[in-house]
Amino acid sequence: MTLALRYAVRSDVGLLREGNEDSAYAGPRLLAVADGMGGHAAGEVASAVAIAALADLDDDMPASELQIALSTAVANANQILHDMVSADPSIGGMGTTLTAMLWSGSKVALCHIGDSRAYVLAGDEFQQITHDHTLVQSLVDDGRISPDEAATHPQRSLLLRALDGTSEAEPDLSIREAHAGDRYLLCSDGLSGVVSEETLHRTLATIAEPEDAVLQLVELAIRGGGPDNITCIVADVVDSANAPRPPSYDSVMAGAASNGGRPTIRTDSPAARAHLLAQTAPQAAIVVDHEDPAPRIVHDEEDTEPPRRRWPIVTSVFVLLFVVVIGGLYLGWRYTQDQYYVGTDGGQVAIFQGINQSVAGINLSHVHQRTGIPLSGVPSPDSSTIRATVSASSLAAAQAVVTNIRKDYENCLTAYKAQAKYQTDKAKYETALRDYVKKYKTHKVVRSRKGKVEARPPTFTMTQPTIPAGCPGPSATASGSGA
Image 1 (tube, rainbow, N blue to C red):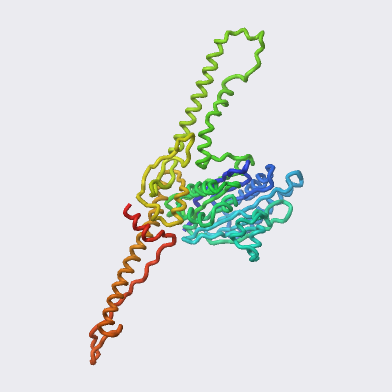
Image 2: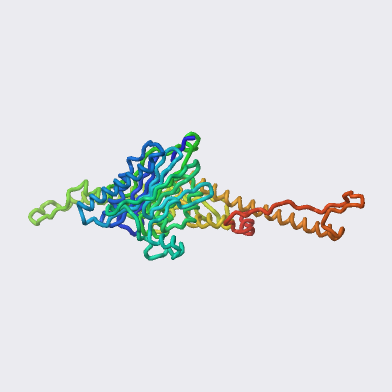
């Protein structure tokens, strides 16, 4: 078996930041996320430097060299930051977190410093595989505060370790064994600090395609307020010979590393796409600027040209503006119709075409397909995700999401039917046993004086069925089964 990766990466500026200080890299053998800090462009530079220092590692190498390669690259990045601060003290205080995974066959080396995170979904088990280097995490480790208190602690963003060029880099390094079917998530705290671990688990477990998963994760962080830059990589470990879809081969940079540190504009979220639709009209000024000379002041003595000569120019400008505005709106509308999401309509799960937004009172989506799955019968983790809507890049991706939801719903339905049969059969058994005891005055086998069996008590060997976690209850599921 030859293992490979199928991955997707997204970086979003969020709702409150002016620029993106996060950087990310996703390649066939290297995944990395860095969250810059320091402001004044320095945070963007620090994260981009860290990613650039690791990018050359995305190549074949023996498993025995993975950890030393990562350690050396991190030390080089830290030295570059040190040299930059020495040359320009004004950027002192900049730094970056770094979480990276380097692959060789079934072996993967994990390198981590700061509070970006890595998670793994292996089968049904979802766990964080990095340890935050923060003040609040140290307080949790010492038992001084609880994990719930850490989530709202005023100093939860205070790092104890980072790449800053002023101290020796001390990343955590470890080796893991990769298995086909594992799914990894690397992210900045703009995602993990806003979206709960339960929701991360549910999203990764229910959305099949990495590209759809990263889009949904960014949307969840935006809906949570988007207070920070949001960057995430979702990577599936696949058997390259038998995978239903081919592995990824392109290397991709995102965030500050992809644009030299310049702020990026969000275009992946429905809210941003709707905003762009509303902002189409001002683009006409660019066209006019290219086609016409810049305005100039005309003096009275120069004003000898008859006014009627200017009307064709003015008319052309307005016509051009009109064409650009209408054309932009049409193209924007057409783009929305290539998008899908899963939500609710009339109390049941439905696939919508478009985006879950409206512009100037116009809804940019409509119901494409009703599934017949009642929301009341869907397990609670699924129902909460559906209420928030699940974005999909295509109709096939949306139908795949519905297939997973239907499977969970039918599992609950089957479990409650099995439970009902168990209770009915158990009641029959208990009645038969009472009648037997009443008749023979014992619950044991009745034998004659010669030892011949004259009567046997009724038996019951069924095992009580297990109800899957999150099922809403037999009444909700039963009422929905007829929908």
